[in-house]
Image (cartoon, rainbow, N blue to C red; front, side, top):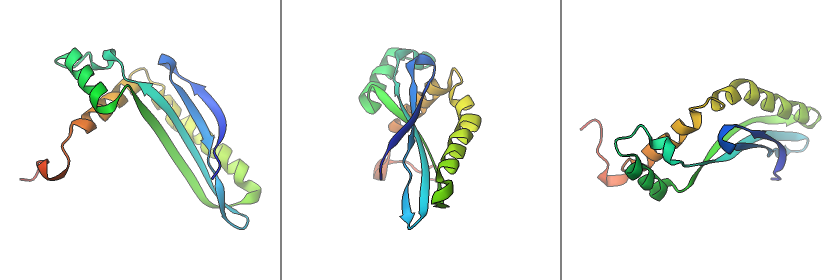
Length: 134
């Protein structure tokens, strides 16, 4: 699989989303047409300003999830004729820009994204985890 940068989208807070074409041949003249959008989001102290103890939450987040978290969006179409693969890729990009980009462009999206990654890292897993049904 080759990864080809299609475009860069600059958002607020110096967040840059890279739009990648990661399409590949499936068989013969048939393709898996795939878009991957990704970008690194810095974990900032201001993301934790609504928590009880901002400093502690921020320090704990840095320890658990690191200084950045990765946003990823992936979509694909399978078994696409080679003749229309570029057109299908453009449709996937247009769909992202129409449906998802306005959502991730909201001022509070990446704050909530960082907080959700932090919350997920705090949940116990394995035998120590408490079931919600017990």
